[in-house]
Length: 430
Ligand code: UD1
Image 1 (cartoon, protein in one colour):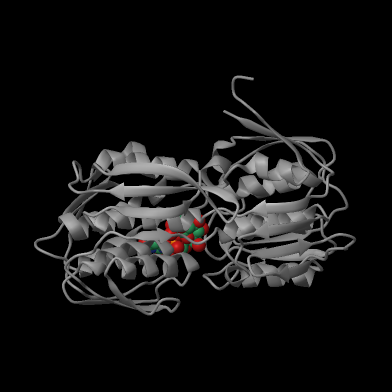
Image 2 (image 1 turned 90 degrees about the vertical axis):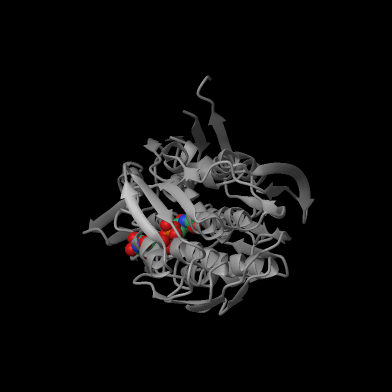
């Protein structure tokens, strides 16, 4: 397994191009299954999760054509997905275990072809990750669902039926799945307590362009009037707010100045407010966010993760790394996932002073210095937090299990090197 070596102590200066949003690309790629016409998606990032999903779609019988293109000065990919006739309606264990968002094939395949078999993803490092909302909502829409041999087997007679569903948690995954399924249902579906993340609004705008009739984007009540057929389109996905937030912390923690090109400040209001309160200067331009922490003393701030527009759980670990070297104490509360402090013991091995209380809160008391150590990545965002700690630690930090980072951060070493970090990948064979 590859490792990343970082020598700390270099402030970062320059421009970082923010990539297309992974968590938007995944449902949007699966939405292409709702039509038998070709769908072209632009601004898809080069990530292992995209490759995993493409492999699943190939197995379903989708024809995939990828082309590189430059968008606003950044190399990205435009991919056309075309599924005129699926050869399989099964999402096997080997695909789903590699990438749990494979479950986004559930809603589209069921709505369009009336049958799907999906391996249940199970839990992961950050929590149990149930799918009850996806499944009960589809049942309310007339699906017959059975769990057998680790698979969800879902069937419908005719079309799904519009229903009034109310989510007990504002789940991003369930909102995407039910939205996609409801576009082809007979009648109207209302989703109450839907997620409001920007990824959902992007999916809605794509589905409406394909001929769907969805009202309520950016609110917690979505109304979907089902239609008989959707058609092919070209859609450009939004940029990755979590990647942008992660590099914003990189500028802050190294006391540097980074311009995050193609980042959208509107999607990052809560984390940017926290950075401002900590003492970081933030400037927003037409197509970038400038994060400047030169000659600044940073002060710890409390954070509380919540559904959008609250503080994103996917930035909790990165901000915790920042609090580790900021003055004073900060209370970090994780409100979305039950096991999302796996980075704490690793940060403590680098000299951080963190006290975890139960599963949900941790007090971070700032220390003057972190010291380099070999550390272990546990999940995607925690891995980036360890890179951040390595950027300011004294000495050479080795981050193990880099495959987590490859799932969600495009060209990570290249982006960091270009702004002055001393970072290098050690290949398994080296
Ligand atoms: C997505 C993101 C993930 C992020 C999370 C929360 C993708 C691919 N992943 O994950 O990075 O951390 O949103 O912003 O977009 N829940 C249930 N029952 C369900 C579904 C969810 O109880 O059927 C609960 C979960 O346990 C959790 C909360 O709802 O407490 C939010 O989960 P959800 O929004 O579904 O997360 P994902 O879509 O899996």
